[in-house]
Image 1 (spheres, rainbow, N blue to C red):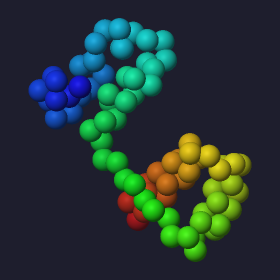
Image 2: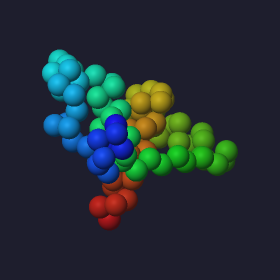
Image 3: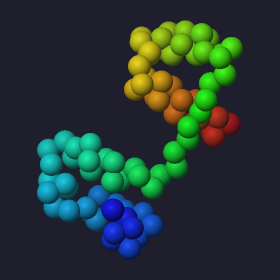
Length: 82
């Protein structure tokens, strides 16, 4: 979308009215807002998987794609602040 608008980044104000007016803004709108943000893909070494699962389950209650993403983002933000 940002390329279509000729911009490097887009803001909520740049989106179409029907996207902005959605009650919960919708996953499509969030996708357009996040597509140009940095993305990190991490391959966890096999010897660390069990410890990772235990830590995520302890802090967030369960292991899912959402809790794993949240745990990784929390760890990254904590590391950046140090």
